[in-house]
Length: 209
Image 1 (cartoon, rainbow, N blue to C red):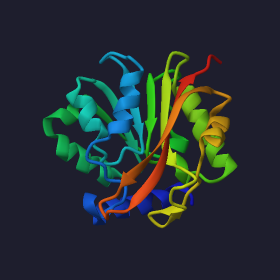
Image 2: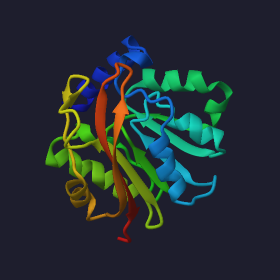
Image 3: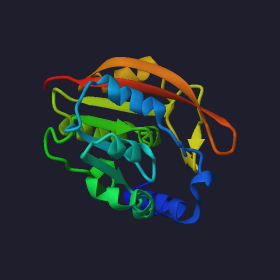
């Protein structure tokens, strides 16, 4: 699926479905926050949420005093929903509509790269390589990356699209050129439909280039 098709796919979903009608809705992103807190960074940390959509992760970041937060998503409708929910506090966030594979951040732009939404949708070697090239450029040697992706016990598709599943060794292997694994865990995400999706979450430290 090329970028225009992918963008239209997600724009349609966020324009036609409420949060309780999509599987990824998570009122409290506990695991994402736990990984972030484990890095011991202060409120000056520059954090980007990849595929953030209308996730509540940004709400908690702003509430905790982070003021250098970026949310990137293909869907303008998703970001507008998040901005509307945050109200006046949306001013503390940089909102970017775009495809992460075509994102061109400044070198070392973000201390934390967080992704609970997009990585499993990249199923070809070329897409994965392009994604990792962007992440490696964006995160400095002192920075961190957290990925939440479908585990080998998780779904094989999501929102009508195929996904790639991972276990701890295969995810670490994909990232080994630019990132060193810190820790991993698996957890069951309870969807609004009362079904379970098994996720693998891992944190990584950026290696010096």
